Image (tube, rainbow, N blue to C red; front, side, top):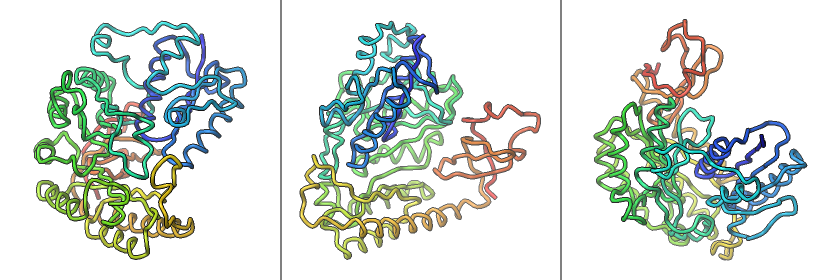
Length: 417
């Protein structure tokens, strides 16, 4: 039997793609290994200059660890640059990786009739406690700093039946939380209305009816796509986590315009107020880019003030990294690296405070957690509000239960002391 390794960089969608490939290879009779492999796939990222450098290093590492393997460079990097590094034998986009493996090793994929009808090859291989499923790919927004529309292409939504089938399998496999992921999640179904009559809200209505489903969570979604229908459904349905991950990127209208973001501060703030009127306790996390070209000290202070006004529950901070193929790389007034680092540090410290303040409101309340990790006699779980809690195992399970693996991914209710 042939052995394989997959090296993954980048976003949750990339991680899902790697998991799907692993499932295909397992079905074909390949065996994953920690030793030297016959096949090594580097699923690359190209979102920033730093990501490209890391991808190149990963290809070299794959060759060093697997000297006799077929080395495949997949993912976003080759889709942008159309190159083949010295240490790679083959280069291909993630969407055609199966075709290439078939040519290299001449394998036959074995799938069930139900999966075949749905167009799915089964569950993506993962060691996570929560199941991440890609329901959509591609983006056509063309923010001035972002290479993703070029690496991922046009909007492509998966068929509704395929998604439902995969989630049903995940639930049967023991996953209690399903996380819907995509490059432009809020536009699910907008590109393929012949096969997908529903939008994201319609899909969610079908998902929450799946027998045995614990809960479902949305990954990143644009503020312009948080519709009234979505807000109403989330407020009504307990199976949908009270959490939205909404990219902000900047709290300055000047910078938002330079970024080609499709909203203003006022629009963003008004929508957040509407969300919180329906769901007062909801967790709202956000991406923020610091040091974008033209960002002055005044612009940064404006961003910091706006973040405090919104009171996000958590921030993901990214110092601007110019990708040479984006418009922003050629903008004037590029910000010094030391200034970017300093501003990022300030916002990361603010994020810690925001998270602490947010978590305080849940003291003494009952919370639902999905167990993600077990440390000796303690359990670490993720709440529906997207923060972790650590509790003694004896508080929620019988002392007779010794098989910790059976607890990972399960939902329990606890009192948050």
